Each structure stands twice: as structure tokens, then as C-alpha cells.
Length: 280
Image (cartoon, rainbow, N blue to C red; front, side, top):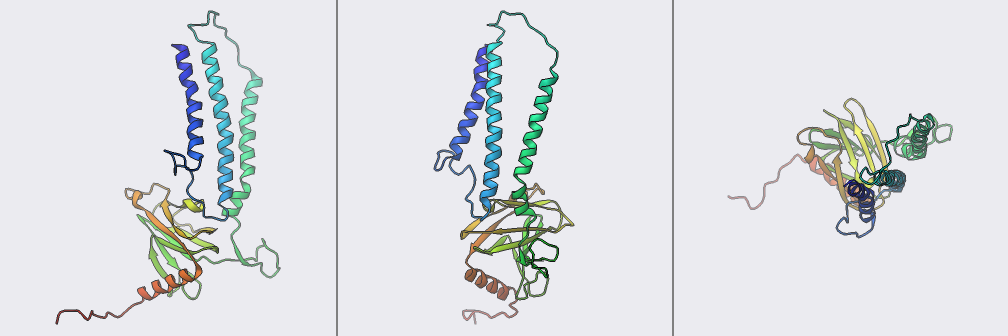
């Protein structure tokens, strides 16, 4: 029975690797659509490449570890091995090796992902380079947010800058759970929470930002494809977390301006005109 169990252990890396390969293949059945969602971001490939690199690295370690485990179970099966058990003291050399290798691997991953982190979390788009004319200095004029998004149980409240281009003024346009943005333009979004921890997640843009009460966060991105996509909360935020979903609508600048004007007109309508078909 010992070697039977060793064969079962061998199936773990084989089946695990096979499932990952099938899921990653285009038009694979029955796992089609279980891999990454469609990437509509200019910089999404950076996140995909980082994910794939870590997946391949840990995948190789997973396969090697599984094969070594199978070999030991097969070779030293008690029913087939008549040699007496041998005990040995621990090896300081091996302990140093298996301590240094993971540390070096983690350090390499940390350095490898620094550019991806900086692009999505540190290098906020600027309007101008400031007085000194040099990008990346303290006097850079940062691009203002197009919209302010507030997470609350259990919805996303949106507040667009009006004609003055500033969020937080009387001409702001308000909405809930439907984020409209222009395609092929750099968009900055400010995020905050009204109550508990939330996480604003745009799967198709490969962006996720935790929203912490009392803090204002910023996200920026450039969507390259028009369409309607998901917005979800990726942080368990209470009993209604499952329904905290929204829609991301990517459209042309002309369509976006028309939608924003229509939304502004709708929320500022003060008169009611009764229908001509009302009963006399």
C-alpha cells in the first residue's frame, strides 16, 4: 500500500499542472473564462507578466517538491525496503541552503515588482512639470481626479467634477455604482470610505485599492477599449458584501461628455411637467 500512496502523491503535481495549463489556454473547455478577464488597460500587461512570473517560479518549486516527495515515498516504502532504519543528526549546511534560497527568491521578487508598484501606486499623472520644468520633483502639478468614489455599506457613491473641474463644489454630478470614463485618456480617481474597510477592484484594468476610513487614496489608469465591465468590492465588508457591485462604462470622450451633461441636467431639474394624457 505504501507505493500506492506514493503514486497518489505523484498525481498532485501532475493534475495541478495540467489544470493550470488547460485553464490558461485560449478557448479551453470546460475551464474557458476561468483565467484572467479581458485586459483593457494600457499597463495591465505589467501585472499579468508579474503574475505569470511568480506562477512559473512557484510552479517549478511545486513540481520539484512533489517529485522529490514521490521518490522518497517510493524508494523507502516499508513493505519493499528491508534495510534497517538509519538516523542522522541535522545538517547545518542544508539548513543554511534552504534558509538562504527562499530569502533570495523573495528578495528577487520584491525587486522585480518595484516598477509595477511604482507605476500603479506612486507615479501619479501630472498636468505640468512645475516651475523648474523637471518631471518628478516636488513642484509638479498633479492631475486632479475626474471622480471621487466613496465606499459605503453596500454601494459605491460617485461624485464627478462639474464644469469647474473640481470635486467638492456645488456643480458636482452624483451617481451610484456606475462609473463612466473616457477611453484612451489618463483617468485619476480619488477613493475614500464612509464606514468600514472596502476594496475597490477593477479586474479588467488589473487594479485594486483598499479603501480605509479616514484616508483618501488615489488610483490612475488608461482604458484602451470601450465596453461595460465589472466593479467589485474585494474586501469582506459586512452581510451585504456580495451585492456591492457596480459597472464600469468605457466610452468615447463625446459619449462621456454627453452622459455627464445629461446626468447634470437630470439632477438639477426643478420643474415637473404633467403628461398631456392625464385624466381630466
